[in-house]
Image 1 (cartoon, rainbow, N blue to C red):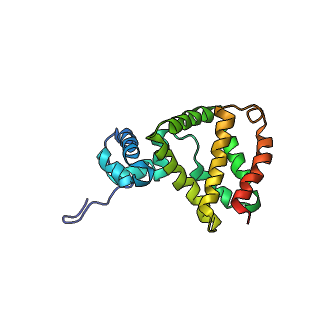
Image 2: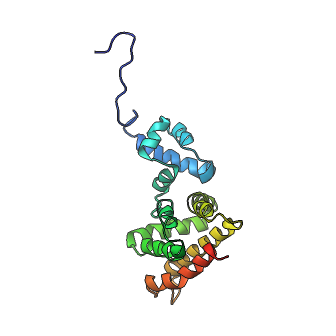
Image 3: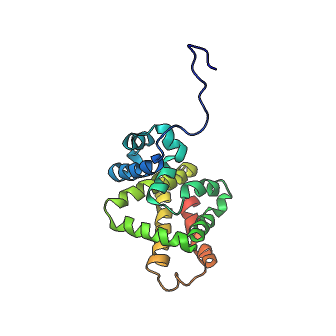
Length: 201
């Protein structure tokens, strides 16, 4: 029993919200990302559009990257893996990055979704800035912060160009040679190029 004049202790667990809150948040997130782009979208703004408490957005989707990935069905999460790669052997970054990309895209269920998303992003003037914003914030910015050199943004951009070029050549255009090569051979050949972009003086 709670004494008069005092508040009942707050129960732990997820914040209160309607049973369809998760779906409404995802719909609102897709609308917000589409209207504002990745960088300008906020968790608070999504919550306002979905008419839920912002704590509920964080409960279902811990970070903006998590929310974006769920809203647009992103099959590859560089924001979760790149920090681990950059925490590893600096002399093997290039190989590790290419091995990660190929390891993901060689999985049929990931490749199907990723290729559709990439085609949509490259061919849609509204979708392109959205994906670029996600990659700039969640991938390139992490690389730039770790490099700590004057031309870090250029280096990170060159890495991104190598990755996108590889994906397009192998999985979309299916260029002979690249499409037929084993992942291990591509890691051995492309990894040093990415490594040079990242760490060469």
